[in-house]
Length: 130
Image (cartoon, rainbow, N blue to C red; front, side, top):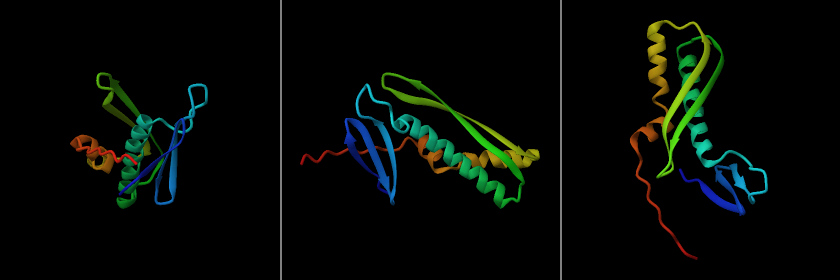
């Protein structure tokens, strides 16, 4: 997978993948932000990934549910600036026994984004000056 990031203007950027795009940033300090900040996008990606795993589990196991929502809170630190903890609160209207609850919690931890964050991925950076 490869996502292309392009500067649009000032501190406003566009991320593109497979015909879809996300805008993040702002033109200058006086302009209104457009889209979520990169940190919020990362938090949202974690929440979306977990939500999709919940929905998939419920469908696979024929569990009737409604009102699925999640809140993801991030605790951050500085020096260096980073997220150090994610707390995910799931609100789900479903009749689950203890075995199903445990299985669903295990399933939530299997999402791609969560697995990536848990593994501390290697990041390689290169610069091509044109």
